[in-house]
Image (tube, one colour):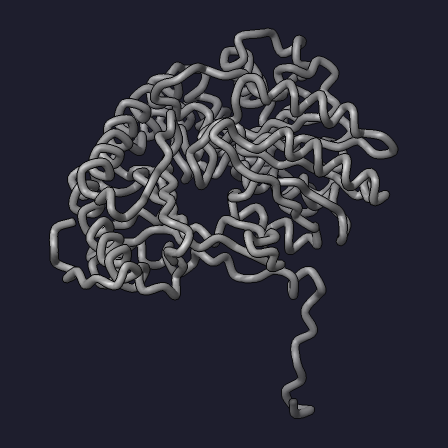
Length: 445
């Protein structure tokens, strides 16, 4: 490097922070030639345009209210919204907030739940600290954890959610290795997980809380419960959060967002957390932004208080239920039995997780992915969502490459069936090729 053009000296944190692997797929979302099952975005046709317009008119019909909405608020967040969010949580949990140890003073309003996730990691994690998470997991947050220097230790994802028995075994092992004190967080998407669509079972929720209480020896271990998809429930039981089992509000953090169940453009989330953690988070958030945008907080509060939010969630659930059913039906009809595929049947959320035989390759560099691009259909390669583990042959750093994530969130209803047909053709051709047969890409599976 010449003296006239010296290298930029990035921080260690910046060097640990890589580009999110889904960037290419998000960029392709705007290309109309693709049927995009990759983008985990909400359906633009369901956005509450007229309703939010009426709310904005209400806010700006009063000079005093308008000035408040256009002014800074507190770092903690708009008092009216924190109160409305707590009332909403009480309705979701079907119990008083006092029964799970939370008041509106322990509710933080953040710029989307993603900011809350980041800030919580930022105040808890030093390089080398351990976070336990499911495999597969929400890869945007595991990328955040990597940038913070965390060691993400994965446990399997089962049909009942994150494997609590595997967590117990891992904690026992870490205690024997004198590393238990480095465990800071157990991260779980407890409802309709991204990427699998699976939900933590009712029985596992209090068990996980009991585990962190038991193993919080010299340091308190926290459960970070990401409930971004909680209210997008189409069938199945209405489960309480892990947080609802804890009266003392010491070990659990519960994050919610208005993005998935209402409108992502509000960029507003709310999180219930222990007061000592909240104090540290507020210090960091003050360094970030002095508080989230006031106008969107006023809109969210009006939507909650006026009943519009609940009405919109019901509309979304009806719309997404139909799209989920269309995707599952198309998979059943078009993916051939010879492909050896299986997939999850989520009770909510936006994702179906498809698994092919062990020798299949769904990665971005695979022939399957390239064939799908040529066919005009996109998915998220499943290997994005995995942390390396010991492989079936004993090899270190093994990442499965036989899974893929499908999202029915943004894709138009009439595109679901032809999109799955295209995907099924590529899967059938790949299965035939592995068996030594030849199937034309335009053949019906």
